[in-house]
Length: 313
Image 1 (cartoon, rainbow, N blue to C red):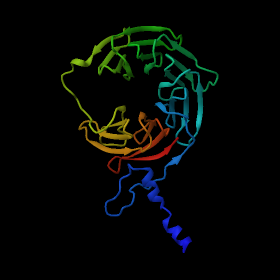
Image 2: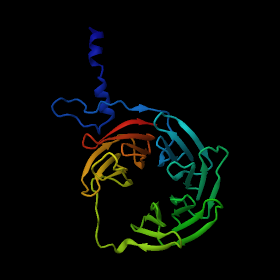
Image 3: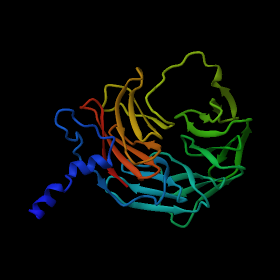
Image 4: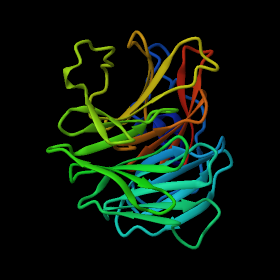
């Protein structure tokens, strides 16, 4: 009888899942979890928070972390392909050109570094000159120039081969948070803690300030905390133009780009602030987090663009 009682008191696996995942929604009538997919756990890419992600190939991603390392990871099979050590403090941003062998990283050590995917010796180039943490990083579409931004209020354009600073400009209170180089253009877009969005002509670092914009194109409302990342998804397998976002509230959301309607939302419970997003196609998303590494998510376009977690590493 005692043995039978113990067996009855043993918590079920579904109950255990529910206690560890309060974000899972329950079907009101059945009381069972609506999520049954098993999440594959691979070896972690970093031993601390993941701060930045970028897609390198159709099966490789690049990530940077608070552990000061830059990692190339095969997210399809699981496993570190290459690890770069050279920064003296946390890596803040990573970037690369898709299907290129060159990788760039920025750090709280005030530098940016260039790495070769196949070279384990050390960085190919070092870009030094900022006075504070480098918080913005983007490579030109032709791969010849690098743009960096910092909390020292400055933006710099560098020659990737020589490491020389070609252009530099500083604006009061322009604490750079992110940089994006517009594809096939000489334009660079940057965001700042002063709530401004600025567009630069990279040829002379001339500024277009968007604070006087008269019409808001679209606003996506739904995250409960700071939104840290936003990417456009490929329209190859979807009839809708889609945008994906991740935030410090542990959620990843997919939006209809034109109507601002949230078409899917997934809570990664326990992940802590979600720091970055990357995607190499319309189906697979990679999301970096503070507490639980990198999450591999999939978008099911045949089921109302539902999001599900496939693996983490």
